[in-house]
Length: 352
Image (cartoon, rainbow, N blue to C red; front, side, top):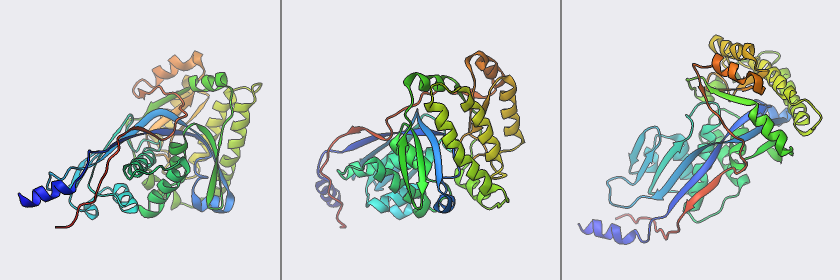
């Protein structure tokens, strides 16, 4: 009882609650050129947009009433008394990196994880933003992206590129250029009506199975086909072609769909783990129904397909894809945000 009273006295203040909202991303062109082992020597470029599907991270300091000091709720629940006991590598390393203790963290999302929309990186960005806010600090979009890249690629040693963390943090439709060991983000300047038309011509379907992006990346990186670098070089050039289509109001927007078909064919050449017979059959089914082009989002192996379909063929494509979940979406511009914040005066627990 005495120890309990001491603990309560040392836990001063009202509880602070932080809720962050971080978008998922849709990558159109240049995927694969955001891998550091490629762009450090060759440069890279990606055209992507965040969409109105989000993950939500809630963080607060955990009151000292329990026999555990940290509670984490995601696809499983962890309750531990020491950060080193945490199983989730990103949470564990982020807490150590930012010196976070005694928390309750919960994760929720609009779409399933491991589905090709950069979900793990969106979570990393949202979690880091919440941790900074918990310490009463502001982290700008560049810092959030940089720290999420460091967290996932260095501390967690997960294979993958840099685009997901950047897209989740900055939000909007951007061209991200990679050079040396750095990057720059340039918003795509496009007429609102043309952007709406593009959005209306894109259809997203969930294949019903997920995969771990880092595992796909490792499998693809283990392969060294002679034309892999050549394919990545061409995929990088397509970013400029796509940008020209979007920004030139006199160009045929449908060429964006045809270019998606081209980049999908190139992407399939960069690794055997990207596609399989089932995924190829799904793609051909949509094409036969009227899609001009499309691609599997993310590293490959499953998750979401996006197709470019003009309005007169969209009912046919939905019928051809009726066994898969159709997921409407809109482009978004907000990037990582703090939805809710309440202040707190927190003092770390003293060892008794």
